[in-house]
Image (tube, rainbow, N blue to C red; front, top):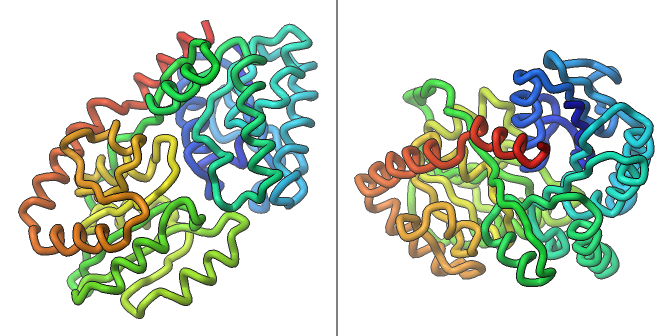
Length: 358
């Protein structure tokens, strides 16, 4: 089959992307290994020349994209959809709610179209009223235009099937077995870790407020960059104590080291689909503390460690408890590692996607 992916901001090998970018790259590599021809359309990056191929049977097509919060990605997706309509692609796989509005373009030329919904993007606080309304309305094309619609969590499946009375396919994100453990150096501090984009719905401000109220020799490391949320990032730096360190985007080697040597991983999100950072932390045998939103509850169930979403005082209490119970933290980490490696395999997930294509 000839498969085209549209709607990602880049590929994870070169871009500080989110779950959609990682998912497309991991699935694309495995489809290519099976002999399928894969094309990924994405905005032209700053670091690589257009047209570079990074993997056998994968072609990357870079198209210009205005650096605009509201229209840059939509214009890129539109041009990609028009271009792919005249290509030899058999399957055109759109990512996320916004890009789904153009899934009709390749369908008009007889292409089979798929949409994967990674989250309810209209809930994200970085968007204004009109943008959120637009994304909410994009639920309709995401459900009614493509031949099939995929979601990455059971919570999303329940939501869309109840709202639209149509079948939705659940295929989660995955995780790779981690690289060998990278031991800490003797001079490194003990630390708690957050990894993700620095956007309001990730709840980082709750984590900082909670951590500021704890008397501890632990540090808090925050790895990630803002996404059109510079004011929010400035606010985070303003309220952060001297024991909190912002390290920016962590390249893979450094990120592996951060995971392996973290005492605890915290993800205080108010909105998620299925966080790949969460799965990666668990695969590194880290105990994870998350908010009690449904998307997190379905990953670890009753075995997870949660705090009440949006309640920084409850988060502070849970942090204190886990800091004071290192044996429990170690046990939970090993338990989570086994769970995530059994349930969230990219090889298995790629097989499920391939069945959808067929």
